[in-house]
Amino acid sequence: MTTLESPVRSVVLETDRGRFAAHRAGSGEPVVLVGGYLGSKEDFAPLLPLLAAAGYAAWAVDHHGQHESPGPDDPSAYTLPGMAQDLLAVIGEVGEGEPAHVVAHCAGAAVAHAAVVAAPRVVRSFAPLGSLLSGSDKETAFLTWCADAVATEGAAGLRGLIDHWARAEPDRLDLMTTRLSTTRTGHLIGFPRLLCGPRAGVGELAGSGVPLLFVHGMDDEFTGSHEEYQRLARRFGRDAVGIDGAGHCVQLDRPQETAEALIRFWRAVSADRRPVPAAGGR
Image (cartoon, rainbow, N blue to C red; front, top):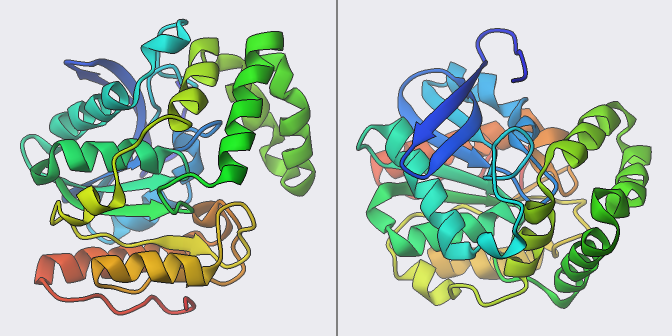
């Protein structure tokens, strides 16, 4: 397990769906943060102390088979309903019967989306980061390429992609390289393949009654424009928050602004009023 300085601790969650590696910080209303494909709990490291300081019990969790969480080698073992049940099991463990706020980055939002539709009373609110929920043709093509590359060459098939990303974020090369080697091959193939298959509709999500907040980087070229986020967000009765100076990993590029947007949203949910956009957002 990764050793972190206070107030963040590295822990293992034991659930009825198996073991999950997690980082946790703080106490209060539970918050569960899940990463996307080729991500991990470490992608929320800058957020955890900020959320803890605001009075939340924040848990960042690896999916099964991702980085430090065990998982099967068979790609077919990774299904969207199964991963949604994993997330619900984690919420049940950390929330001790209390619903949790869920924050999910990129592909992790598809898992959280399915979990909300399956059990809306378990989720206090849902905040997708860098995700429009329904995959675009561009995303599908990328995910298909990743799955095929790993199926042909193993994890080494993605090493060129990791090196490419690291040119823009050289300080993250060690982490990206390590988790590529620690993530199960079944996960590397199965997760992107399931994301290219059927998903719950946005209409089902809107009908769940769970409050949503879309947060994205204004410089994110992977998912969509602020206008696209805004159109989708208004189906849920609020504005999207676009963070200036942030790309696809908005929580890493601008953690303070991202935390402020989330905290305002959660406080508004608790007060049953519509949130005010975070400072620095659009």
